[in-house]
Image (tube, rainbow, N blue to C red):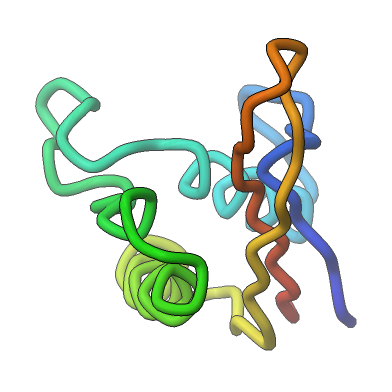
Length: 105
């Protein structure tokens, strides 16, 4: 089954989730919002986020590569079908990027 995960729509965090699919989706959403090097005692976890300071045409390809690599390493139960960068706006009217990830579990 296909699922969509967006970095601008965080899933509620449930500790000790019993449903396997929800556990995988929750882990994938957490991975999308974690910058590599920010988790104490687990410094390799997260995305390098090198794509955030690149032009849009290069950012999408680099983000897709970073996300696919991180998903394969940290959440291999999910298969990434597509990665898209979505422009958005903050309340301060500056451009931000959101990530939309389509996976199968």
